[in-house]
Picture 1 (cartoon, rainbow over the protein chains, first blue to last red):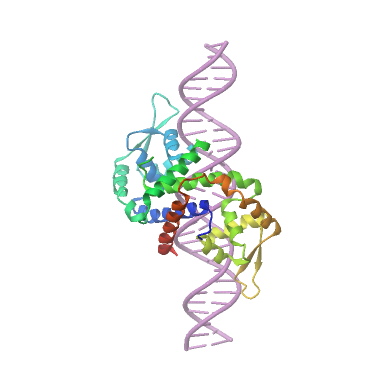
Picture 2: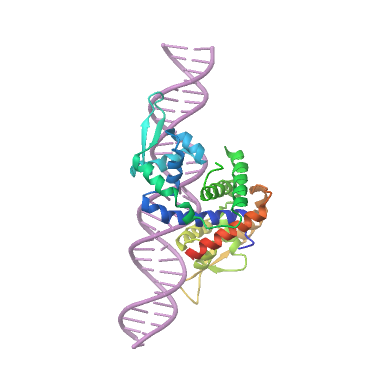
Length: 135
Length: 135
DNA sequence: GTGGTTTAGTCAGCTAGCTGATCAATACCT
DNA sequence: AGGTATTGATCAGCTAGCTGACTAAACCAC
């Protein structure tokens, strides 16, 4: 495995960590994708397109993630009165509560690393470089 | 984004890199999951369970990935005569050819990094730690 | 050798990415 | 004001992870 190319190591590591998230989150009725949305809604209501852009995801994908969150009662969609094409998405009280509970989980889920700072720097560099081509 | 937790950075980076792979691979009739299999088949025929274990994936997932590869003619399944439960998976000539073409693509797909070695070390550490809980 | 357990593989159904196509509302332009 | 273009959201259909449930073959134990 130490001879795997970078990309394969990256996606394998991501999948394994994401798996640990699943176990921790489903007691809260949340998924990883949903948690990101709750996090992004911190500052206030946002349109779906705006949420998708920030999560680096297609609007179609965001639409379905919001379906789930809405079904679970963690989020509400309200038609924007000024622009009836847009849906303003807000956290419900239950959504805020779930988010606060989830905030503390990261430490349990992510394995402790010696060089965590270098990892973060490298990942940010990858995201920046790849986002440039795509967004 | 510089305040995102480690796990979110990791999965976002993985997704963006994987997206670059898609563009590069579909001209070869391959996907990222399929490429991993072709790579693992280098040393010779393997059972599906063995392939799944090495790819860190469930056998059900491997089964469907092999469906695709078989449909594209890149891989063949042969019932093992000694143990009729097992399928021995081998690369076809077309599969070997596709794999060799794909080998050179990594450089085009993965953005160049300053501290690539630290990244690899950290990812291996994550995979090892998370695999311990799961496999 | 018959019966229970393990193993290899598959099927069904879920989330979550993606693309391409479509619809309704708004914005723009003349 | 009317026609066209753009934008926000959704629908359909694909790959690829996952879990849970199932079948068939092999193994084992008595």
